[in-house]
Amino acid sequence: MTAEAARRPAVERHTIFPIPREDRHGRARDLFTLWFGANVTILTVVTGALSTSLFKLPLGAALLAIFVGNLVGGVFMALHAAQGPQLGVPQMVQSRGQFGSVGALLIVAFVIVMYVGFVASNLVLGAQSLRSVAGGVSQPVGVVIIAAASLMAAVYGHDLLHACGRWTTLVCGLALLAGFAWISGVTGLPHDLWRRGDLTLSGVMGMISVGALWQISYAPYVSDYSRYMPEHSGVEPAFWASYWGSVLGSVLPMMLGALLGLIVVGGDVVAGLAKSTGPLSLAIVAAFSLGISSASAMNIYCCVLSTQTAGQTLAPTWRAGPSSRIVLSVVFVLAALAIALLGAKNFLVNYENFLALLLCVMAPWTAINLVDFYCLQHGRYDVSAFFAADGGRYGRYNAVALLCFGLGVLVQTPFLATDIYKGPIAKALGGVDISWLVGLVVVGPIYYLAARLFGRSALANAALAPAP
Image (cartoon, rainbow, N blue to C red; front, side, top):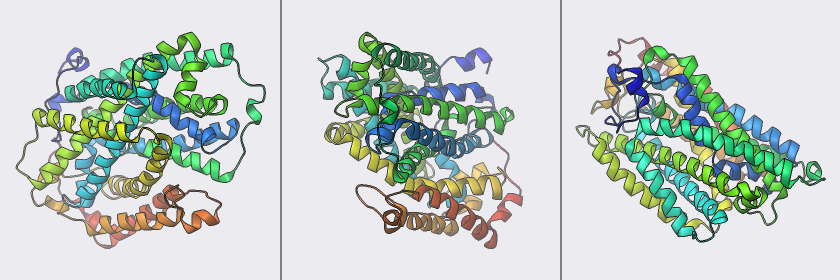
């Protein structure tokens, strides 16, 4: 494929199977714009506003917590991105190498729920954005508009999503800068801005956890967008491009959200953004709506890949193609539409609880996947075995990984602090939620030792099938 053809989006014909060498294309900078553009959305702004509106932090502490959470979580996100060029398959397919072909279905199911939840969140915020600047657009109509735009990009596939990332990086980046400039220079900031809020350990840790989860939540699908890159493109370029694209694309709009959380009356961040940016509000909100459609399309696309992975596990002879992507995309958009329309009233509380519970699942999975890839297998997997009916050398179940995953969920439970459930240790810590950190620190070493003890690390030394 020529460089010119690689830059020209085309309807994607590949699904979950290994990307052949002749179809590999892309550059590390494409990953930077993809993840920067995917994060500069109204949902990221609202997430940043949690620091001052929900956790009640002063601005300085809020900004520090946002930085720390994203910088730490981004490491795990980017380590997964580096797996794509080496293996050429989606992340959930690669998880068969740790959990076994059937064992990985447990993780796939959690991830599908995560995707639908994020799409629904994007639809709610996108609709609120449209309504804030176009009063004639009702909430249901706005949800449908955002959903339709997201669906088209998801159906088109990988290359169009990368192209959308390049455009949203430019358009949404300019809108973000314009928003900062207008609020600080024209609207004006309150004289007591830096004295508002209360500094609490639980608030700081709560926002660090939100920032970390924001990044870790990309881990189950970040390599879906790096799997087309040539193998020779290298691990380091994929890591750093994904890392800085996602971290910078998240931190900057979250900073805007933290600022709005302190100056908006009534807690409606979306309406507050429109009011604070005056005559620029229409352009800024339109740009963020474009970004949120692109981000939703990415979630829909990866949700479909995960569902195709589950389907191929249950029916190993099924060769998922582009037609199934279209059908499944429509199904998941309809599911997200239903959730968005039914849960819009209590969105902020539901969203924060959703994020907290996701940590309980994503942290142990991330620890197992990364330890296996980097420390045990050293990036060498038999990709053909991922698609074997019996799981090939990785089997149908890997009891060690599944038990460590279950242990990870259990050890995090006492540290959880949400509106739904607050664990005893979280209560003793004054409501500080460090469950995600506990999951990572406990599960990684235990899985490494258990895998070596039961001989799993020997797979790294076995003769492997040729790369795709």
